[in-house]
Image (tube, rainbow, N blue to C red; front, side):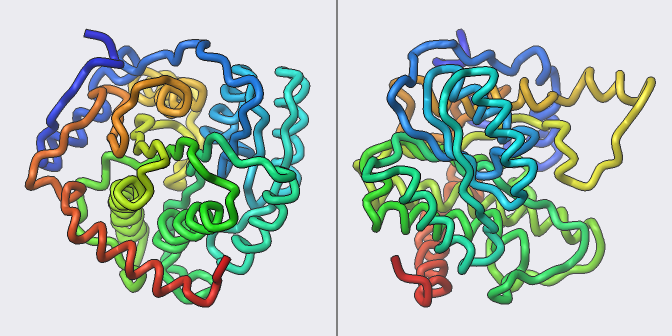
Length: 316
């Protein structure tokens, strides 16, 4: 059975679930096919300036897509666009985007609209994310992981829909199976230290899945999927770079960004995916058991309504 047809109902026991993310993931992670081609397609990748996002953006351009990178860092974004254009001969543009500040999100939408020049995006990949190392609030006063990973993407995508920048395309939202540690996603989670930041990240990743399920329910014209790319060495959790023997051991278990991009690219490019589905780099298509927190549709609706209220001062 290949990745495209594999269906798994994973355990909701945290140690078993987290072990399934690591066990033989280097061997099990699929390689995305080079086809179908995406020539003539317009794609937006948040956080596409570095790491996993850069490899996703580059993979889309290699298949023919015109890519827009939406990210905070102007220098690395310009370098990423230059690299993509040099390697693929496909257009790559930059739209400044700070997901932690909804005012920036709205300005970014203006720039994205200028780049689109009347076109609708065929693909949006919500890749950008933060794993806080200490407690911090966003510009609007929300806990930072919630603000960036969950609320910022909610505002970006719902306003793209409202502006006609996204009509009937595919939306791919990156999550992390580490969400299984949590059962809530709120703006007011407070904590101390790196362990608290880890839990804030888990909560936001649960929010990503809830957002995806509700987005698909409310917008049947879209193809919406959530993807766990794998456990990828991107430095997201503040890990110091490894060298020598420790680096070799890491490479036996942890994916590099190019390998980590393969499952998101699969979900961005391949036909006949389950709408609203959840795809995992080692487990294939996930079928959630009723007790899985990600399957809690009432909480998904509550989160959507809460984010609508939090962003009401930022209309289209």
